[in-house]
Image (cartoon, rainbow, N blue to C red; front, side, top):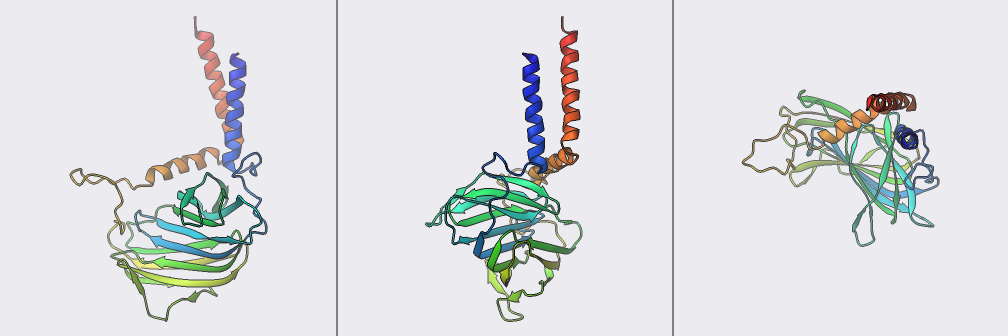
Length: 277
């Protein structure tokens, strides 16, 4: 009986390791990879918000697939590696958000988010790995990689509050939606909007962003803590990032390392059982 339980535990560990390392291509998993060949997006908006509510970049992808023959839609999106997902949703025709189960697979420089959508509209929000907020001069390149054909891609970049000398170097082909030198102001934030037409699958666009910001605090404080309590120094998404970092470290060596842990576990159990009266 113990042998059977150990075998089941080993099988679970190996399966979990393979699924997390990206070796499994989604077989037997409703939210697995693949199955999105030929899908196209009519309009997609990418919102990029450095240091909005966390010392990282908050990004939101929303848009709509077109000419879909059947539902649910099996699809995937590529996001910066190590990002923490807040919402992976499908939007009904009435605008209601229906959160979906999703699965992330390590694709090198990116994470691939696989999910099923019951409606053609999608909404995906996440936070990238943390920025170096101790350095007041910030320089980052936000890379957008399309996993589908996108007819119109709009990119909205938001300037952090209390920052100066904000500048953007857009990729070739990105057209500024407003006249040169003008900035739209929404809720106190400055926004810069760009548009790209006819984005092909696997095409990449890098938006280089630079600014100066002396304080490490984000633009908006969303921590739900009492004002009487001393402020916490833990970022809202730090725990999730730490968990993700452990997962990458543990499964980076593949199933072999996990098997070694399993062997150690079983040997320890055997020694304990052998020493029991």
